[in-house]
Length: 414
Image (cartoon, rainbow, N blue to C red; front, side, top):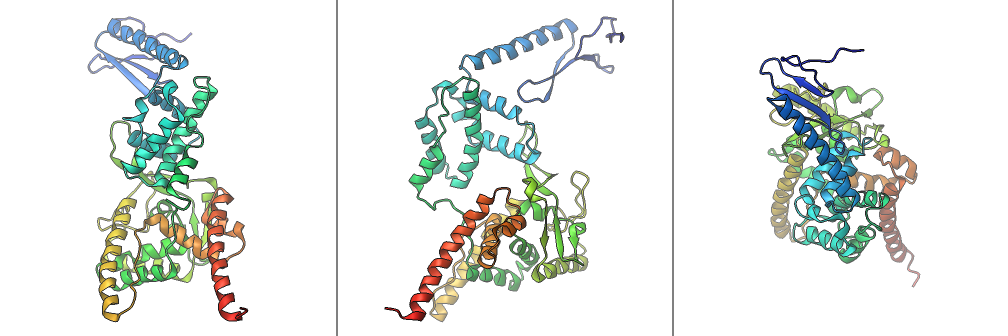
């Protein structure tokens, strides 16, 4: 039998108890049953420590009793739900917890689980849209966190029905069929944006990055995490085998940190062919970095050699890229309105868009020129074919309208 550990006074220590040598502080280490995270209780006195241990156990049991009686709030249920999601990748876990903490915890999360009705969830979602100004796509993320939280309470017989069932369908119906759907840039807008940055000395350094985004359809995390060793110039192929995310990583702060993880889904691990424009963009970026003496020197989770770097030699923050897109678009539009007025023509206005719109734009262009949906799905890394089909159907509808316009114009059948 293993000999029990003892403190400085010769008293046997129980499981989980330790005593630091340098200050004789007693520590009780335990695993939180809901978050599955290691936590600690401290005391200078062993008897006091054991009182705290007893209170801790009682609190944990009381918490379960409160949950079983249906008297816990939504926050308690979410914490219990997220603690069961051990299969989630770290990026998804961080996204879920950040979304919940940012939009739900301090407001709707304080309501008792048994008191929440369908109309409460609907009003909360409409409040987020109208008062907080979030987009429908963001609300979808909130819903993807809340719905399974309620569903777990249903399965545990805490509530009878899921009050969030059908709420998103109702919200989208109120907002209109296409509200919140990301739309691709038109070919004219796409060319205007790329021509503007390539010809503008203030923005030309962004050309390789945006060329790669528009020429591969990769997610922004996959591009900012791309390394030189992921490029196969000989076979003109890009290996997408990881992603870099920028989220808060600790409970005690909202400060964001970079982290390397696998792509969003298993389907995200893929090889993407390198078009000539993309190949040239990588070569241009390498030449520029050599000339300027600036390269990405950052190391994240043991990985280094990242291709794209900001002016400080670090990884790009996705939101910084989105802010750059906004600046570029606003400057272009201001100049384009003046040019169009002088030239007496309608201006080509670039709408507000984000990095993810560039992925959607690439997929739209791909769907316009490729009929095999499985190939499109493989290149895009869509886990669900429905995602690909939704974009393909939208493109097909536009093509049908275009085809009928050509039919009417060319055949003169009436």
